[in-house]
Length: 363
Image (cartoon, rainbow, N blue to C red; front, side, top):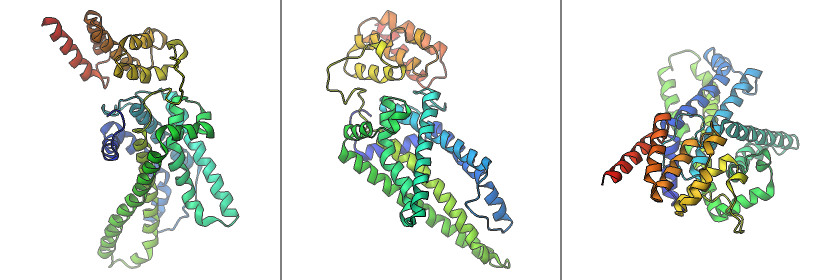
């Protein structure tokens, strides 16, 4: 899905990514860690005690932090895949596929830092008697700013990308203010309607449960415990829906790396960071600039032998070689990729390309 998809197509594509096996694995891991974090609460619930939801231990905080790191890092990789034009390809089960682990973890750290800053702001507002708005502050900040921060981060993966207001404003402008507001409103509706739907289903379940346990003495007195558990589960649901909003916005990220630069300057491969070569090569292959693709990908394996983009870059190089008539060079390159990386997400596509080129040689 290239160009500017309709909101409906981008919505369906986002759901397909979030519910793909490669992504659900990390959603499940993140959810399990969150459930482990509230395990003491669940234990007291079983014993008909009413613990404070504010009780936190070092282990609880560590589990929550790890959960956020996993979900944020995987979401960043998914957004990077969309930004690079790979949103329609299968999501691999690896933690990262198009960005390095370092880039994903740094993104997660910036995300956590931003959440911590909004927590401090909430506490400050509570102290001055503005508690009525603090419950919405964190999600509002994350929802409104993080998509633009992520685009800025993908262009320049440094912590400053998260906290540079000028660059963030440019990112919003490059997406389009009208489009940015529309996607944000759609995500807000998801954040409101999703937990509401979940809450209704859970309320029906609890009503049936209490009806069956009505004969147990004092069972009705413990309804507040189930209500607190519902609040926790709704909180988990809202955080997962936030990843939906971030991924949804990524479909409208500009696919050119230097889209804000009106200069005709074309960066050389030596001046480009490794993570930026794949988006530029994709842009060049779409524009049928095959020599540019070969220039960008030349010596990539020599300079970055363990980079996650290696297979993708050389697959594009092989396509460029085939398009320029150098099938005798493209075919061995594809065969080498298929032999060395048989489990790569692109393996099936590479095999199809090999068969296609072999067929063209025979004819």
